[in-house]
Amino acid sequence: MRSIQHRIGGVPAGGSAAAPVHDPATGQQTAEVVLGRRAEVDAAAGAAARAFASWREVSLTRRARIMFALRDLLERHEDELARLITAEHGKILDDARGEIVRGREVVEFACGIPQMLKGEYSDQVSSGVDAFSFREPLGVCAGIVPFNFPVMVPLWMHPIAIACGNAFVLKPSERVPSASNLVADLYAEAGLPDGVFNVLHGDAETAAALITHPDVAAVSFVGSTPVARHVHEAASTAGKRVQALGGAKNHAVVLPDADLDLAADQITAAAYGSAGQRCMAISVAVAVGGAADPLLDRLAARARAITVGPGADPSSEMGPLISAAARERVGGHVEDAARAGAKLVVDGRGRPGPGFFLGPCLLDGVTTGMPAYREEIFGPVLVVLRAETLDEAIALVNANPYGNGTAIFTASGAAARRFQRSVHVGMIGVNVPVPVPMAFYSFGGWKASLFGDTHVHGAEGVRFYTRAKAVTSRWPEPAGAAGAGAEAPSMAFPTAR
Image (cartoon, rainbow, N blue to C red; front, side, top):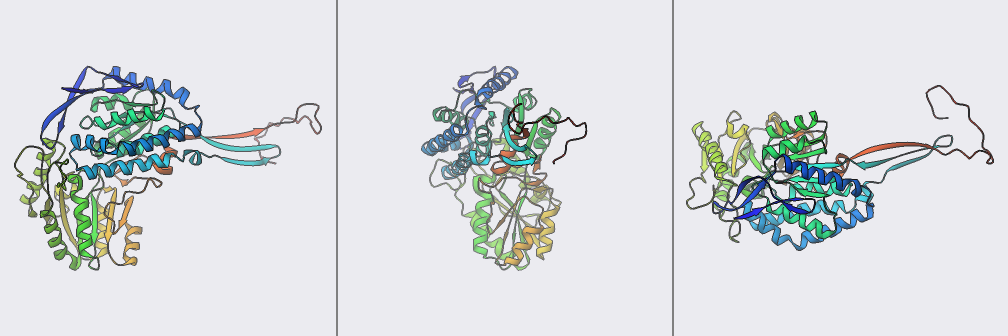
């Protein structure tokens, strides 16, 4: 059985515990991954701390050149990375390639780190006194990431952290470990010194030890809301800087004046792409007024037409769920909603054959009290709610505890503007179903979708991984120089003059 090991200090490292890795398309175990325990956590954090001492002194120019090299290597190894993602996650190859491209865009942003770290300077703020500020790295930063984007979500974190001068310990999901090891190899090929980027495989026990480790200065997390809340509390209590992104229940509001074919196409892709295992998936369609029945007909026809199969099969449009437990949980939500009175328009359960497959499901007549609406299902299930007016739809979005992403489909600029100014959500799409910002903006939600003050990547990512220093400087003339003179000390609080 193939063993997937840690990458600590630039070399593979084993461990005392291991977990199976499965191919979701077949249900078969394909490898085992070692799990970090206290000794491995100490080793990874220690290697990062030692590397940070010298990496922080490396010039901005050299850091940027390593990011340029990494960017090229990610492009050259895109197919290899995509195959690893598909083999362990199950998503189709084109979707895997798409996440690599979006992650690579963050590396491209990090290539401009010299511009992002330019400080401020004020000449002569007082007589003979200048003031300036700059930002410096924090130290060892940790990233704890979910299974659903094995490459993209980590790339939201470590390129920015490393370009800012930090060292990094990545704990990927134990379900999808291989891509992170390949990225570590690419960093080494790009010229990154050993220990600046480390991969620590593990489970919840590993994560708990990492987020409270004394060598770790900052923690970035993406996962479910209950775990994000816990990580934020535990890391904050331990004195860490922390950003913790939680779950979502993303709504797409469709107005009667929308292009319903466009809306149905886009919502279908956003609901069922990657088997719904995206934090930005559309899981609720809110049909306003007369849009309801024609939209439902279109959504049902498109859901039934989706080809479900192994991600490596070019004919597949949607792959399996990550595990048998996930399939059971998602199917349970569908069953519970149907028993509670929702209409099961499309039922994708009961697909025969091996693997963790569950086809697209579409529920109509869902109410806000049903668990299928309240909870993040994280599977290929789209629920339809009906609203009489745009104001009623906005109220639905705002009453939901999550605030990650939302979308509106309309031909009215006035309606779109009212929507984007009124909803309590961090990321908004107008006729765009998955409004993931480009790398030069920042990604993050509101309410129960984010714990912490800053979003990931973009300018907020740079601020998260650095801290500011302000310097007030005076250089008096040497004694005996022309114009030099002693200045009597003042016991009053200093003020500009």
